[in-house]
Length: 159
Image (cartoon, rainbow, N blue to C red; front, side, top):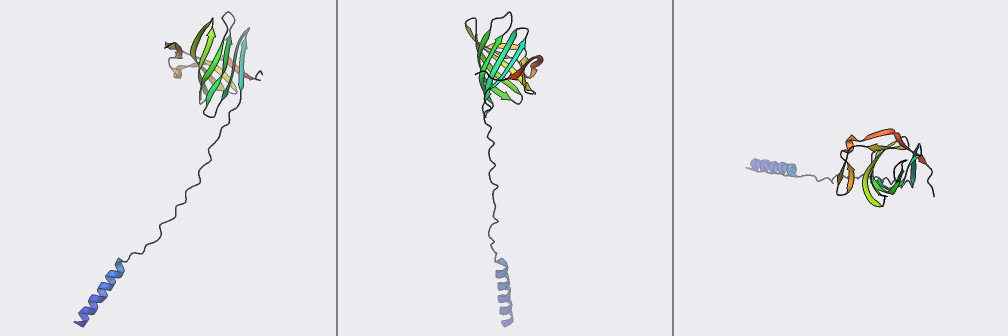
């Protein structure tokens, strides 16, 4: 009987020692330091012009860190009434899309304009248009055409 009790005690101690779990501290996770946000400063006023046979297009604007554009645009085309107004829009990749609010012949109008930025210039875009709620917009921005004959080149801004 002593042998049986000794065997039972040994077996119990083996089982008890096997069930002991050693608790290790959890592994330390070190987070990566946050990346610094890229701060894009406004580029200041940018000015562009196009001249051909007495006709002139002038555009000046600034771009904020959210790629929002705010500026002025004027068209003085030979044989047509001059119009000038404000330019408010956004830059999407290499394309400036904006609402041009202008006065011509005493009437205020709004139309969408597009300019493709290429090699430090802006090329005026054109395409089919529709009028909705008094605003003229492009029917399909993806179908816009940009003619290099209508390229506005960078100039020093007038004070």
